[in-house]
Structure formats: C-alpha cells, structure tokens
Length: 261
Length: 231
Image: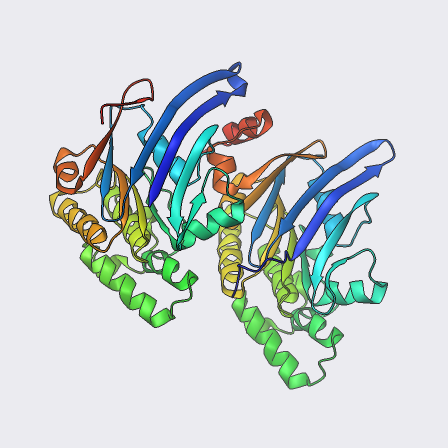
C-alpha cells in the first residue's frame, strides 16, 4: 500500500454551510490521503456532524468544494458529478457508519442480506458466493456467522454496530466516514469495537474521517485531528501534537477536562 | 543525523491567565551517526521537551529541528503532518518516559507492529518480535497477553522492543531504564551500543549514572533557565 502518492483522496476547500443566519460550518479546508485516519473532535453544536454530512454528499454546502479522487476522472467535485455517479461512489468507494446502527441497517432483512447488499447493488448475482462473502465479513467483525439469517434487531447494540461496519466494508471502500461510532455503547463493548476498527483500518489501508466527542477514541484511532468549535476549525495537527501540546485555548480546555480513570 | 538550531519552546497556559512557561531558549545541538548525545541537567530543564520536539510531538516557536531522513534533511518544525508521519515511520524510534499502553493488544503484536506496518511478512516479523522479547527477558507466558497488567519494568521493555525492532536510524530515548533492574539495564546498554555501531544517532535522557556513563559519546547540558551551558 503506497501512502506516498501526491494526490489526496479527498480535498475539502472553503466549505461553508449555513442554516438561516446560523453558520454551522465556516470556511473549512483539509486534505485526506489514502490510509490516513482523521478525527474531527468537538462538543455538541460545534458543526462536526454537519461537516461530515457535507463531505459525504449527504448535505450540499453553500460554498466551497469537496473533491474526491475518483477512479476514472481523478479529483472531481462530488457535487458536480451526476446523481447516479454519486450514488455509485456512496455504495462502493465510500462507507458511512452512523452513530445509531439502526440508521445504517435495514431492519426488515437478515444480517447476511444487510452485509451483502452493497455487493448486490453493484451487480453480484451468484447466491452462494454472496452468502460466502457475507459470512466471511461477519466473522471479520467478530460476529457469529451462523446468525447470518437472523434479523438485525435480534443483535445487541454493539453487534449491530459491527454489522453496520461489515455492511460498509464489504466493497472495500477507500474512504469511510464515521459519526460517533462508539457513542452509546457500553465501555467494554466500545473497547472491543475500537480494537476492531483499529485493526481493520490498518489491514485494509482505509482512510477514514471519524467524528467524535471522545478524545480517547481520537487518540486510539486517528493519526490526525481537527478540533471544531462554533463551526470553525480552531486547531489541527497530528493527534499526539494536539493532545499533548494544545495551542488554542479551547483545545487546552478540552484536553484538561478529560477525566482519567 | 540530528541538527537543531536556535530552538525555542514555550507553553502558553490560556486557562491559567495566559501564564507563559519558557522551557527552551535558543538550543542548538547536533548528533552524528554512531553517537549518543546525553541530554543532561536538573529536573524541569527541558530534556524531555527537546526529545519531544525532535519527535514533533511538541510544536516549536522558533528554530529548526532537522533530521536526516532517507538521504535528505527534514525540518520537523516546519514539516506537514504527512511528512512527520513518514519520518516517524521509517527513521525514528522513540522510547517515551511515560508508558502509554494500547489496551487489549498482545505484547507480541505490539512489538511486531512496526515491521508489519512497513510491509514485512507476518511470520518473519513474528520471529523477530519473539527474539526481541527473549532478549529483553520477557517470559514467553506473557507474549500473548496485553501489557496493561504487566509491571512497569515489563511495560518499559515492551516499549523498548517496539521502538528498536525496525532498527531506526535515529533513536530518541527518554529514561529507557527508569523501571529496570540491573540485568535489563545491561541489556539496554548493549542495545544502545549495537545501535551506535550500526550507525544510528542516539539522543537520550538518562538519570541513571551507570547507564549514562556506559553509553555517552557527548553530554549536552541544560541549566535551569532552559538555556544550554558549557560545551
């Protein structure tokens, strides 16, 4: 896996999104390269989720551009692509892990069908092969593959989250967006999920943008970090730099507020 | 291999009324291949801070922090996050003073990781990690356990193995023997010697005089004002 390429996987420039008079995101810019994990950290209302939605084609920004390194056209503004192309990207090259796994799973179909859906959406038809892939991915996320035909709501929250991850990763996306992937889970379940994410990101060479309010998650998963407050990025750098040598008053406040167990 | 010029580092504590801690003032030093530069001075004079600036863990206000990386010089003070990550991955080994253990990953996997990350074949990386753990006297029954429950000395040795296994050209050691007994202190002395002989540049903080005297090529002295003195 070559992480020394010069073309970024994602380039965000001057991104601004307003809701009426309120600026949710103001002039945000950054680049992500293959294999990098970036954490966007901030408290409630900082604009981090809005930013995530804008860069994952879920919410069109008012200003600025979001360019993705498409396989055939190179860097292209995702909002200038056709709708079918955007949908194709969302199903193959991108992944989105929602905070609440029920937002990222289909409740009415089996675990296996959930995991395999993206494969079928890109034309896979051979039933036995699809089932075999789905089963393999369930095992990769440490779910019992014998439960392939069970409905999602028969799984616990932590297991549903892992199901959601498998569902996204099966098409080996190059960039995965995650919105508070471990919030709401029990601490021990969180720990296991973080291990899994860390291992998968390393093994698959994933690039990821993870929104979280939890600095420990950032420390564990991300090499780079951006701190948001009131819609603006107040500080960014390597995760260890930002956490060990915070420059901005708000970052210093955030870091000093974390209680060590 | 290491070339620092006019390094200034201070901390501004915004939430404590903007108090300024000026830790390093106009520090210049260099380390050549095969040398071990010992950073020396009382507690609080900025020795660990220098190492953290070399590792680009700390930001700097002034000066250049150049490291020799793959036949060119990289100024860590001005490099992009990507460049810093590349230098850390291929050129730097850093043993920090305070152990931050990643929970729930087995000791063997922690030690193997730098090799695997750089593309080494899994079985070979595993054998190498096992050899390092043996060298550092970590009993086999601990290899598949996460280090969170290990003693301080055992954790420190895992840290050392992980930092040295990929034979980095530049080594930054912050009190690597603080928690170690006599036998393992000697192992670390031998490891530093071997590193110097293979041409690595070592910069370190050693409060233990036995270890310091065994590994030092030159001393770099810091006094209480964060400014260097003497030679």
